[in-house]
Image (cartoon, rainbow, N blue to C red; front, side):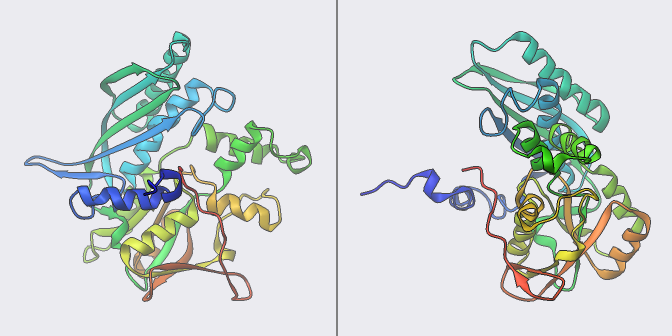
Length: 328
């Protein structure tokens, strides 16, 4: 009998199978929710593995420390966290790792925590064949609860920021983008490198959601972040909420210096690691939010139908990009 291999299953199928060992809906979102007598907690764990997520050639340890923390904080915020409490660090290092690398890694972590809240609350370390950074982040659940399964038909799909910049920044670091494409695009280069090296979670959006919400509106919002790319984020929302997503290609925000051509579409659909928020709201709430927050963009809507994603171009034709980000 042939034993199934993880590379054949893929990330989504692996998670689906692991889910049978957990309470219902535990894998529907990145964060675990724990109800206590005094506070409701959100807990999230993320891994960064050398040669899978980073190399010494593509990112400095100071930036890596920042990124390791903010990737976790983004998951907390996309669940509605209103206060970052802290993080615990699991660290695997090779015996040849220099102390200065570790020192700068932790300096980067503290830089991120000093901006967004919380502190390092201990952890564990061991040796291995390659570096691994595992962070567990803790936060408190805010009044507005964000989950992937709260999207509803007729709600407007919104996104923060611009997607694709992080992948663009990575490929600049890897020298994969021709000088011709980078000519006269110094601002794009700067923004792409910042998106890759120093991504920023979006806690401000939670404040703006509360400001734009009317008293009689619901406190549950369908939301996720785009750590696995814009396409996968929307598909996850549609799948968990059991409705169909319709995206207007012309409304997807792009950097003003973004190169032309379909090949570049794949960057903002499938690039990943942008950590923007993707969420849906009733029309009235969405309109109020758009009036007070210029970093949010309307890109489509949900409707009744089989959980899926359709992207319509300017002529109304439907097209389906092919790539989907996977860790395996």
